[in-house]
Length: 166
Image (cartoon, rainbow, N blue to C red; front, side, top):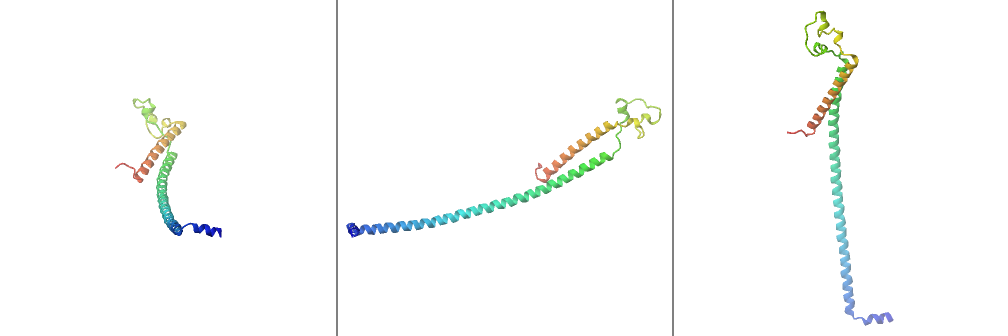
């Protein structure tokens, strides 16, 4: 009873104001939850769109990578084929010979009378390079051809990827 007496002390218009404030707060809280729900949906849609764009870019990167790997493999195969031919040619070639100018100290001299001993004929054993010098010259030729083949492969890569100047 004392609580009821205490409630009667407060005028009734205060209760109406209190009810109106409670109603306004309830509407505000309900509206805020709708705004928050819309915000959450928008954030989720943006995240999904960003993930879809990222996945599309990943697929494009994989396609570009596969295309570049194919081009690189083609260029490497061309290089390998060229070097295999050069190495086979060096292996199958005869021993290297020097001309008469090299054997005579680099100065041309009078013709030697004594058969083919003083000429550049193929049968002269004295004009052949020694085996160790022959292998060193062949190794040097192989290195030069390898450098040239590498440069040609690099040029092909540059042309294939559109990096060549116009």
